[in-house]
Image (cartoon, rainbow, N blue to C red; front, side, top):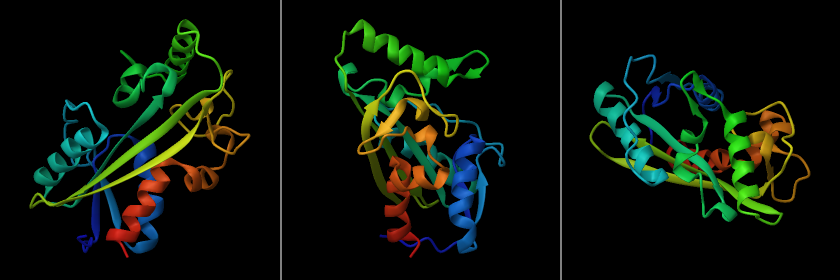
Length: 202
């Protein structure tokens, strides 16, 4: 495992919420976090059909363009009764001409479960793949998962994406009903980040 030995980490995202999440983790270590958006980098087309493939595209493009170590994540929701959909297309299900609408995406997911006449509990899992890429092409890959079930109607006002619909295993609350700290301790991204921090930021 290659150690991160820089003072600046580029998070290959245009998502302010995701950037803030990594800032909270890195700032106590004295690491400055910057974003693809801050460097005016275009969002590369995600042409792969796997989380790791799309995370690789984003991380390596950002590292090559800036000369900085770049971190990218690709994550999504896999619903067992929908044969793993939306999976890598999770964000696509929320796309509208005005931007992403995850309320619409959750309604679409629920409608598909109804169409499929899928019996409850609706088993699902969140997946996160992190790729840490260096400008010389080296990479380290980390994965995290959160198992659970989907609930309807949606519950909770915190979190983002599918959080109001996802109830992690062993919990009575959805991710959107938890504090950020509680969610991070159980989330797919939290698990992947923990693995990365132990391996490359120790």
